[in-house]
Amino acid sequence: LLRAQQHTSLTVAGLHGTSMGIAAILAGFVNPHLTHRFGRQITSWIGFAFFCFGVLMFVVCPPVLLTLLATLIGGFGVSTIINTMVTQLSHHFPNDASDAVSQASGISSGGYIIGTLSVGAIASTSLSWRLGLLSVIPLSLLLYFYARPHISKEHVPHEDGPERGAMSLKFWIAWIGFIACISTEFGTTFWAAALVQDRVRSTPAISTLSMLAFGIGMAMGRWYGPHVLRRFSLDSQLKTVLVFQFCGFGIFWSSHIMWVSLITLLMVGIGVSMQFALNSMRLIGLSGGRPDLAIGRSSLAAGIAIAASPFLLGVFGDQFGISRAYLMVPVLILIGLGTIITIPTHSADKELSR
Image (tube, rainbow, N blue to C red; front, side):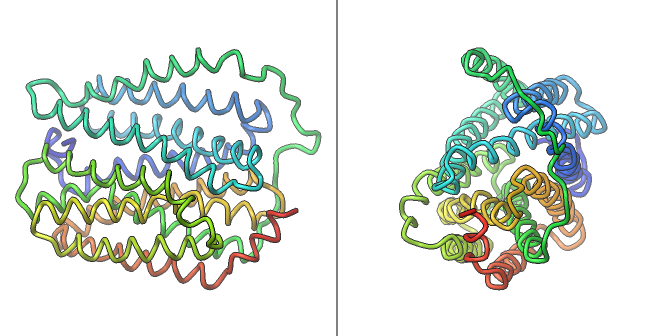
């Protein structure tokens, strides 16, 4: 929808993903310092403020350069919220951290579904589809006023300062796997609608609405996945969802029928759903008891993935067509699987038990 409205190439449109990636990298750098200075709760509300301002700017400023800046500001806010959410949940639910993060992400997928439905529906009318984005601002304000009585107003910075220090080689190998997994998620989020439009010849509005299947799959996987895979180890859970994503993506990529594309997008969403939570727990487990620093580093990984994946898909899409460009996704899935095999779960389990 944005590309059609701004009349840009796939490459230029993909720069919005690059802006989000740069925002995540910036959030990763400042995360240990913000949480040290303000605490995790206040830091999350700082993120909400940036997010709402970015959304408002995106809606009222149509030119490409301004939407890129708005995406950068809003993306910084989103990444800050996610970083503090993961560390807070891992602290409050030490024995079920991956389940807590996954199910919390499942609730957030509800917002993805509602947002996609709202934007796609408005795009089918004479109104500007960007108006659908404005709903997050009053919702954020309602959430703040509801949570305000429970916000801890006192925070004493740790005397040793922000978490710091070098990470192990095992951490960085797992970090590469995190990049690969997030790359497949955002590559799908940004360009799956373009592939649907190319394959089944649907309109931009209908193609955008088809992404509901992906969002529903993510919500289902994040909410029910921890229960279904509870008996599996962290390592086995991540392998299972990656293989499921690989199979679903293969059918989706080859489909020229709308209902097949919708079902397989649902499968891809289920496969992607738990990867963020499971990879985050692996990184925290391999951090040597430095969760805020680990999540800061994971935000750097997410930033690289978000910046590079949609942009490269856009470049390859302009050069070779979106269908051929999408062949990079299964390669990334295999890289993610390779890092899990290289760094087994028990390495992280020992750290998490400390």
